[in-house]
Length: 525
Image (tube, rainbow, N blue to C red; front, side, top):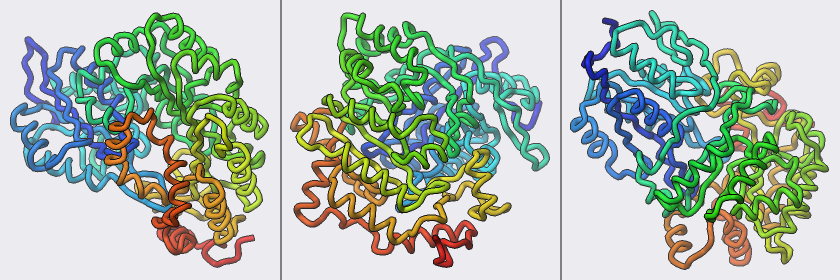
């Protein structure tokens, strides 16, 4: 048997598997562990005894809940899900890995069972995450089949070195067999079977549904079409998707379903088929989507979304500048972003827009284009629509992306930099002081504008959610960012969480990653 083999019953071929959701972000943006539930279903379907421990809202998780689960279940394998390595916010940076390391170390004290790490965060930088958490194995990208094969390998003592998507250390060197991204044909995740959805629903979260994997866009900063899901779109049957929704609706009665595809309306015809299939069913449900593409968001499509039960969605143009859309390789143009905004403004949707400021070629003029777009198209102005315009300054740099290559070439990251640290690209063509003033001024004129440092107020989102629920406010609760900001502007408390020296924070972050260019020297053009 190998060093990682585990005892097993040859007749039943069952392994006791404890899967742990380590995501502790229990605020307004809390997300049920969909991927982990897919893995749980796959492992159970293969005949194993599976339990899932959700630590998101747990109190005394380290000493009581985690310890109780391990001692009572005595798992043969422990799986840790890493959803995110950090919060991707230059002005309010938070790393989630130290707390996950505490979980891993505590597990080591309680059991000798192999620890397997997976999840989207783990897939971003598998070798670094594996070494940091001192885990035995790591699963990259699609985890269902890879994890089941790994369990079989551990049962029999066979070497797991040829299992697609599995990484481990061999004589101190990292070995990874490339994942095999098969068709998206897995057992439904059945979230309500594996976790208590109550705390998520109380905070305003939704029941997650995935209709496809893969992304054929080529955004320079993105990891979806690289390490996470690949660039080949793998579609689920629209009928199967809606059948799952129907079963969940009558079984668990969730308030809202959220489509968590990287881009729900890409390809457009697939999303249309799903919407039309929902409309054909006799029941009604509320829907939202994590990501929408501006292209194709015309009156006809939006009307279909509304008829199907959508009342909100997130949309990710990242910029309203033609130059930046081209530099980011977004695949659409400024006029398409404007047409989408104009069409949405004729509806009663709640739309959360995301803008990423500071990428290659960003100037104060291109920033002004995005801010002017928000002021012109995303203010309430008596319309029934509710917008949030979220502006992040700084673009997170990940290995194996085009932006990483640009950042290396321009000196933003060095050869020995640790990618687990938050690494940032900020265009050297930006005057930072002026950029901060531009964004702050826009936020004073437009309460819909939500800035990076505003993430600090999410600490108040749980009691706010109780208030919204008590008084029957419609979801999603993020639609109330603008009214809250408007109140803050009237009372003078709007910017009470704004750091005093944002430019200094940006320069400090860049120095920390080894950058010594023009932004530090104060000679930016």
